[in-house]
Image (cartoon, rainbow, N blue to C red):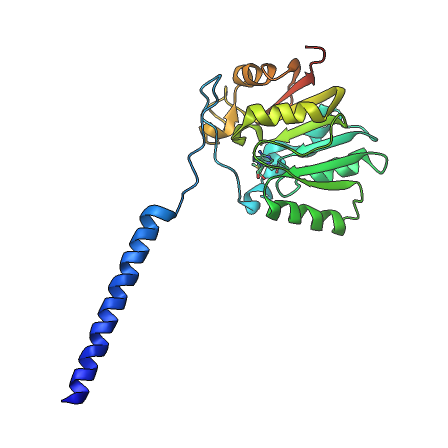
Length: 240
Ligand SMILES: C[S@@+](CC[C@H](N)C(=O)[O-])C[C@H]1O[C@@H](n2cnc3c(N)ncnc32)[C@H](O)[C@@H]1O
């Protein structure tokens, strides 16, 4: 009889504790957990900004050589020995290592990203490939944290479309550029619907010009020659 009463008591305690835990997790689920907000639209063009890329395998896919011709891209952009280049939104360093070899020991590459995991991959690659001219810089969503007036060329490959605060980032990049420094955006061509990529991951020249020129840059040139991407070059506008 006594054993039965004790077992009943334990069952009751179990049910009470389970109910309390259930209520607590319901409360946490509905009140405490915050989800990352959806990407915003650009205030000038209304362009839907993309989510931030986290898939390192995608960035290192074998087909990328053929789709993006990275060596040719850097040649078309005109990367030279001795230049100081910022690889903004460097990801796994797909372009960083190529840039580092091109600018050579008299040049320098700042590899910037906001994801620490990406920057660790670049640090490891630079170590393995003995590239002592690569400097890692962790930025934020609004600030590259690059040094002021130090950069000859700020390169964003497949990055601009996913900046959640493009106006702040452009102002930050502008501060880091030397007076005649260049900003180069490489972006999948929105004007060509036959290029297989999601709509938010491509840019038209018109939208890029509207958004970038408004932040203190002058359009310099559009460089043809890549299979799928635009190369759009701007200069830092000075004195105004
Ligand atoms: C599609 S990946 C391209 C990576 C690299 N440029 C390449 O060509 O492989 C875009 C990268 O931009 C980075 N990114 C997005 N917003 C950023 C910001 N505000 N500042 C720095 N990096 C950013 C992401 O973390 C991601 O690594």
